[in-house]
Amino acid sequence: MIHWRRARVASILSDRPGVRELTVTPSTSLPGATTSDVRAVAYTDLVGTPERGDDVLVNVSALARGLGTGGFALVVALPDRLPADPPDGPGHLVKARYTPMQTMVLGVDDQESPHHDALAAADSLDGMPVVVADLHSALPAIVAGIRLVDPSLVVAYVMTDGGALPARFSATAAGLTESGWIAGTVSVGQSFGGDIEAVSLHTGLLAAKSVLRADIAIVAQGPGNLGTGTKWGFSGVSAGEAVNAASVLHGRPIGSLRVSEADERHRHFGVSHHSLTAYGQVALAPAEIAVPELPGKFGADVRRQAAALGAPRGRHVLVNVPADGLDDALAGCPVPLRTMGRGPGDDRAAFVSAAAAGRYAANARP
Image (tube, rainbow, N blue to C red):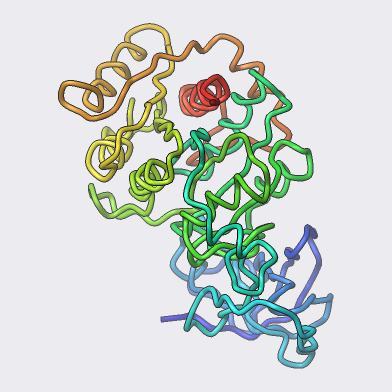
């Protein structure tokens, strides 16, 4: 169910391509609210561009339920100033299908796409490294590790639909593209708004290689995720499915471990149980799992936990990756580094582990 409110735009906070952030004043206060104004996000490609003083219709469910990620209002419509109809053009891929905000895009694999014939015949990544991670926050750290080896490598981000569906929501991906750290975003499945749209993860990976000319692809869900505190109830288990897709397409799947030395939850301390599930049980194809060389007892514990994924019990190959130089590489990142509310100073291992996977991938090209 949705918590609806009418509201008036009080101020404009920021703009980036496809997104305007605002404060709005709801006509009826939210349960337990201490202030009248709330932060809101408008996807301008979908609803138009709200201006100060506009009346808007907003979805405030995340605020009403006190959620962290996604804790803001979403502009659903400007009822008194609807945007003009989009110009006629090619494309018939419908994403966010059968929801009130479904949108139609031109897919790279669409029959009307100039790339359709190439993708219809494509069947191989020709050994391209595909780094897989379960959290969006790993993306910039992985790229930092790649660039430490060779900043000229072309990197593409393939965004799955486990978290945010609008690619425009990711300030991280926008900042990495603007800085030249990635060549662009491929939005796959129900996610939309990337530089390239694709129906499936498979065509998204093929497009990363053949259209964006990527040397390396990184696969992760968008910002936010869905988790229930259970083994299987986590959207990031799709990381294992990404390993399978990369393998089927003759790529080189490389697993980035989710590691934390600050998470107080036992299941996430050291190697997260989500990494062990995604790679250990969901991934049916072998991958190379990057294990960062972390110091002391904590580092030894991480290596011990990761050992469950390697032979003889697991199907994967564990590769130890040096951590020297990775802190400096992370410090040069053009976007903020945050995971589960923590930065590198709070949870160094989380970011070093992701960067280690990037370092390994940069050295693993065919």
